[in-house]
Image 1 (tube, rainbow, N blue to C red):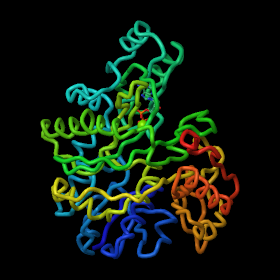
Image 2: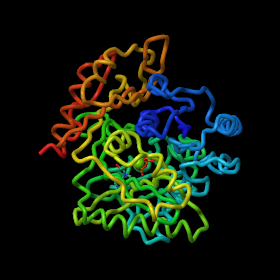
Image 3: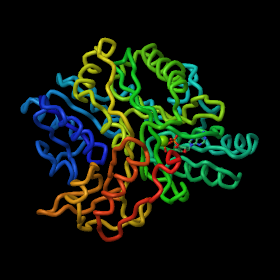
Length: 424
Ligand SMILES: Nc1ncnc2c1ncn2[C@@H]1O[C@H](COP(=O)(O)OP(=O)(O)O)[C@@H](O)[C@H]1O
Ligand SMILES: [Mg+2]
């Protein structure tokens, strides 16, 4: 079979690579793809914009691409699944109604309350003054969240009243466009963050291996948040007991409540968790797609052919599907970025040492890159995700860094402490 992957990040290179691990998948086309998907054997890129649903459908139908995997949240929130399904395609990724679970934090919060899912207490505001009054009464620390998709920049964890006021004023002054016209103000949750991604056909839901990522740019998890500077799986923070609670208190109620709301949800449901010191899996947010870079750490451990899992979800057969098989051991992904990210950073630097890095035991996934003649040049803030596998976290992390040592480009930056929490 042939598969279409929508998106151009490290996640999409990983999805394409993972699909092609099975001999049943003969070809992957990535729209628009990156330097990694341009050079991956049996894979090629197609230059199309992600809002061109008609063009994408036509290409898939004419060329017999039966499976469509949507990577990023924006096209899901814009209804790409509804359109492509309407054209008879098999799409892995929720419809527009389901994507609200990520695309509107106010919707998602009301949903969690209805489903009885453990989460921070919150209030929703559409005007500045009542929001200011609430924050003054509630006190700090407090979390201010723009409602809509804000590319990871819409959340402020405010430790002082002044920070909270500034964050509210910024959101209501239009800093995030329509995404910030509604604001969720919620209590701070304490504990360790972890991500549980689950596959679902709308009725049955099964978790993948739990992961943790490093959001901050600096070592020791300092400095501003990014899209993610590294990730590892399976994180021991999510013990088997906690995973059972996640299944019963988070994933199953979520899928049941989506059903009650008349939403048929197929694809990934990603629970961003804050595991409290008492072991309660509080939900920080839901995402409606694979995480980046969690995917780069989780999917290399998957033994079960990915397209089979996806087709079982699309065809409503997940309950009858055999348990997911995983490789033993651990995986760690080190993100290599351009110096300056997440603010201003240069692009167009030629990347050297990719072949040497790939010749080690590690997997080199490309993110913000493009092919230029025979060279691969940087084309984004997060440039590569280098995944090491091993019997232990120590070995996996060492393998990742051994590969990173082969890579060089001007203004290259990466954290040297990925996985420090699980190194002990
Ligand atoms: N209630 C909360 N308590 C503590 N930290 C939070 C809370 N909500 C969000 N955060 C922090 O802010 C980050 C971003 O918030 P999140 O809701 O995941 O939004 P997004 O990923 O859309 O930016 C989280 O990963 C977490 O570190
Ligand atoms: Mg998040």
